[in-house]
Image (cartoon, rainbow, N blue to C red; front, side, top):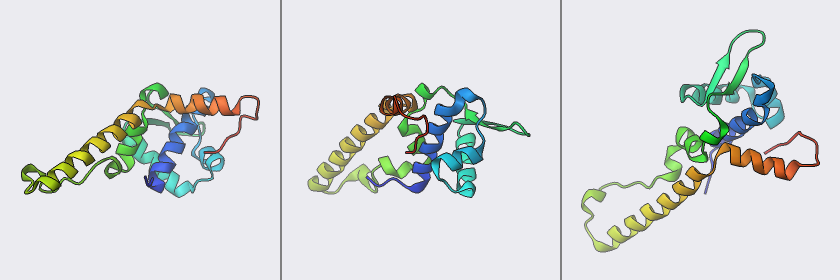
Length: 146
């Protein structure tokens, strides 16, 4: 599976906000620094996340970003659907009336595989990822990189 840089950046951003959200709002510059992300591209990602209702922002000197939902309510699938919806979809051109059995069976198989992948991605939450990070970093410094 190929993950686009937009999906990777968005996922890393949401995870960073989940891990550092207890500190209050998180500045974009802090996210960019911790995750080694381009500030300009991060700005675009944050705007997309905000438009989708995953992130809220606060303006001003003490401004920044925070998750709009609990990390247990945000799934990998929701981030992927926002940033790269074609990743877990199968092009179904002309499938309403598949002209031969072979093509019909292959289309059905791709639909099944895609359904399984989407199901797995929909079952993993940002909180699950944060918990895994906590397990791996217990006893280590709290700085991390994905």
